[in-house]
Length: 197
Image (tube, rainbow, N blue to C red; front, side):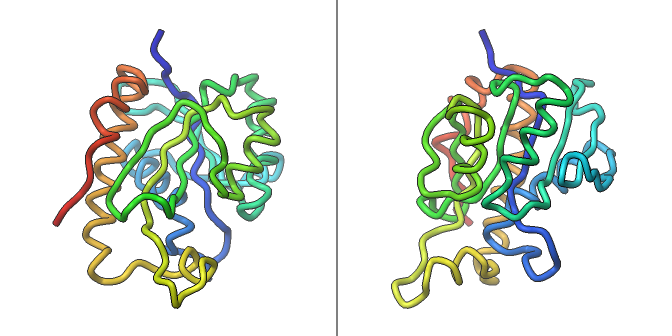
């Protein structure tokens, strides 16, 4: 059976000082999807985040969430939506940044460990296990002279920005394929691809 996501979550940190940083690429991708599908965000206190529901391409009912709990408590926000709508972990798709992938690379997985990512650690703790789909977007490794924190909370370089923009378009295509034909199909087509400008 194909895994078709219903509930898309973008991970990031709230507030203007974190906007457009590497760590907020999940927020940025969900903003693009909301714009594409012409659905608008509302702040939802119960869900501790910005939330919207609407129809994706192909007219599928979809829920979108950007937690405003800060990264290391994202799972609280995800759980609140899952409980309210009685959603299963398999219906999730969590979009987030990954330092272990080069800028411009994507990786879709149906389950897995947190790999050191605090947002995913929190999601695993609150969802009740590792069995939920996720889409990782590469933000590249830090140079040795820069600490990890300043790297992930930093912005993309002018050289990286066009690659990131292309990668976002690829990610949108992968998600839309996942919604229509299942994430397994999207994995087979998009996991090996990268943007080389």
